[in-house]
Each structure stands twice: as C-alpha cells, then as structure tokens.
Length: 138
Image (tube, rainbow, N blue to C red; front, side, top):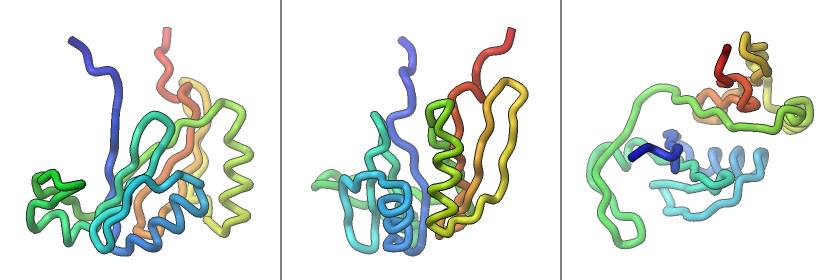
C-alpha cells in the first residue's frame, strides 16, 4: 500500500476575493467551488488547491457540500509549488511580470531546473518549477 501523490493542498488567506483574482485571474486556475467568506477551491491539473479564510475554518468545524469537516487553520505564510514543463519557466516569468506580480527570487537548483518565487495577495510563497528540481541524483 503506497501513497500515490498529493490530491489537494491548502493555503490560507484573509481576503478570498484577492486570492481568487490571483489564482483564477493571473494563474488561470479554474474555480471549482466558492463559499463566501469561507473558501475558494481551484482545479490544478489532477489536484486541487484549496484557499480558506483561517478565521472561519480554525474556530469551528465547517461544512462543504453538506458534509461536515473538522476545524483547521494556520497562521503565517504558507507555501505551494506549481509543477511546470521544463521549458515553461520563461513564459511564466513574462506572464507574472505583465500582471504586475513581483518576482521575489529565482533559484537554480543543484539537481537541475530553476524556480521562480512570488507572493500571493495573502503573503503566501508561490513557487513555479519543473519536476527536475526533485529528480533523484545518482
């Protein structure tokens, strides 16, 4: 029995409208679900990116689609890395710059590939990189 991969990951943002403008508008991730002042969910390839308002989800259990879910939350900046094709980084740099998103850092990794880092409107660290940054060595 083995874990097959990550199905969903979650970030937190006090301003869900700003988060939606960034993830749906700039990054063009399709919105799958939205509950005002609680969450907005985005399709990301075969996985999901969930963005929750921490004030709503940390204080009490919630309900998604009629199903109760346990309370959860985090404080401070989170991190997500979006996997890109090896030749797509330049295009993403240009797209982000056109959208007025500042590139915080660009790192070339010892295993191969480079990453771009930006901040979303909530201050979360958002990375763009090819899978080669985690390629096995040897």
